[in-house]
Image (cartoon, rainbow, N blue to C red; front, side, top):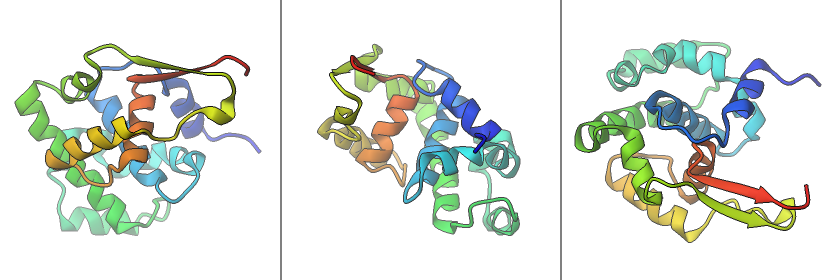
Length: 172
């Protein structure tokens, strides 16, 4: 089975250190949609997310309302989960808020790792963690800043995607 352009694009960017708010928003969005499904299914919809969420312009997404949600839900290519769609909009609003407080979404997130990626080394692929207590602490802070659908697993995946946490597997 051929991988979709969205999956290829996501895979190329995943794990590379980024301080780009729009790309970090994209990683968070995929994390939200991944809940309850395979990451490849969620990532395969990147072109759709960009189309229905104003090319992931954070301020435009933050300004979306019920009418926009109805239109997104009507898109035949979109994952039809209203809770996740609302979460994306709410998270865009939270990003706008933290941008005002911290200067950027990246500044806010990278403070949790003191601006330096945390590298975790594992012997084997099956040892790689999907979450940690640290991710729970970060998720709790994010929720206090207005984010939603950011439990420890989504937060940990998002931090890995943005390069804040980097896994090294010795026996790949």
